[in-house]
Image 1 (cartoon, rainbow, N blue to C red):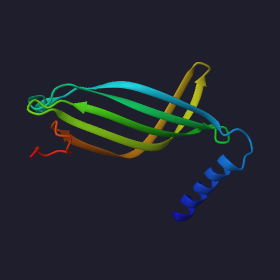
Image 2 (image 1 turned 45 degrees about the vertical axis):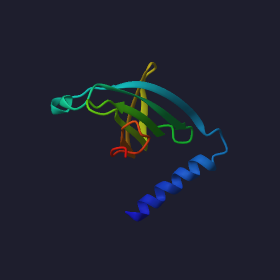
Image 3 (image 1 turned 60 degrees about the vertical axis):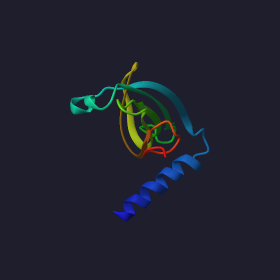
Length: 130
């Protein structure tokens, strides 16, 4: 299994840096969003909002694959305090194809990290102000 991972990494590095052609297409998107609550969480939280920034890199040397980076921020108000801020970042890889001239399909997987904290108006990360 380790051999397969090393082989795929070397194949990717060769395709990106040794090909001599343009690397590929890069696209940016900014998406507004909302946080809709379900179940018991409606007793504690209000509807929130957020934004996501996505960057996709489609490589000319590997036309079926693309790389994806995402970063997002969401704010969810709490009924008794100011709210919860959630920051997240993820990276992944995907497969894309065009079955028709005006139809673009993509499947991707990402993994990442998020950090959240309660904003209580004191500027501290969670807890109560003293």
